[in-house]
Amino acid sequence: MKSDIDRLMQELNLDAFIVAGGEEFNAVRYYLTNGAHITHGTVFKVRGKDALLVCSGMELEEAQKSGLRVATTAELGFHEVLKDADGNAQKATALFWAQVLEKEGLSEGRVGLYGTWQVNLTIALYDMLFEETDQYEYVAETTPTLFDKAMLTKDADEIERLKSVAERTNQVMQEAWDYIAGLKPDGDYLLNDDGEKVTIGDIKMLVRRELMARGLEDTGMIFAQGRDAGFPHSRGEADMPLQIGKAIVFDLFPREMGGGYHHDMTRTWCIGYAPREVQAVYDTVMEAFDISVETYGLNKPTHLMQEAVLDYFESKGHPTGRTDPRAMEGYVHSLGHGVGINIHERPSISHTRRDDIFEVGNAVTIEPGLYYPERGMGVRVEDFFIIGDNGELISITPFRKDLVIPIEGVSQK
Image (cartoon, rainbow, N blue to C red; front, side, top):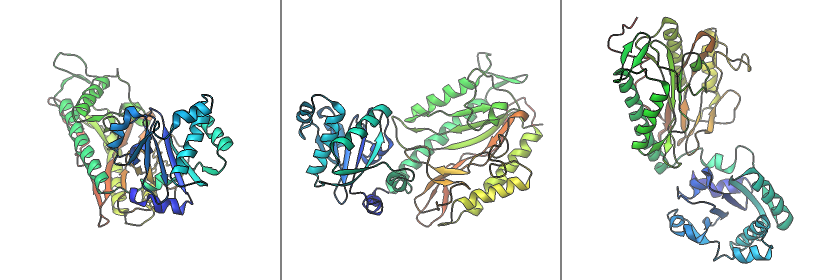
């Protein structure tokens, strides 16, 4: 949580950190500035002091919404530094950062660097920092970083936002179900009111409209049918008509409009009826889902949950990433991951990452799946959970887990 940042800085031996970035969405800056919509703002924090947000004068009003201390580049003297640096932007930025740290009371020490920026500009600036401001030791962490650890658990306000996004996402899933359920069958296909075949692209457009109406935005949903559903991250082909009896993997993971907190959920559907083979695989995946939830325990290593699912799938004869890391069918991914401002955060529920545990405040997915593209199918079911104050695992994805969307006039074989 944000309240842990000073403690984490102490553990990592960081005297300060800087979070920089341009106009790109910047998860760490968003996290620290409480979602203030700024461009090119830089956050400075010296351990033991409140963070300082430095921005241009044009963004002062928006920056003040962050709740942080705010100063403009002009009042801190950036333009004078730029002039002294003969217009060299990277050199001026390096010198300006050192000047801000000095004003914040840090004349030397270890400084962590975070944020999102163009790679070429980042490298040029990094080189200039070492060349011009060698009184500081600049630290470029690898995972888990300070912010990986801080974001690992969510505070009450973050959990409320996650619940709000979850509620709206589940509503959109219902809209998609209801729309499909109301279509007219025509042989193997489905027709809209104009008598046209309904495509995957049509469903995605419907979903995007419903998300936008609820203040959410699509971040690349998966709606993959048949063979495509057998590849876990196939997005699906927009011009492919919906077909009766084909497995569809629908993975919906929107976020708040303009960047913010996500929800992540997956359902597998068959329209009209489910072939026996798909039903059998679906039942196996649902059993794995139930095993996952039963295996949960507060403060238990997360990899034990993944290993329980691996044991189950392997006992049923399915290939897994443990029996063959190169496997392209069967169970080929981890069981889940943290979700927040980023769609993938810690903790990881994987047999290859063994240092994460379940903690109060975690927000995690559980998403077992089996994939057989050459048999024309894939199945995945995913709920999003939070770990409550009492250590209970609470799903915030209440949408039904029915496999078949009934269609009037189609027999459920």
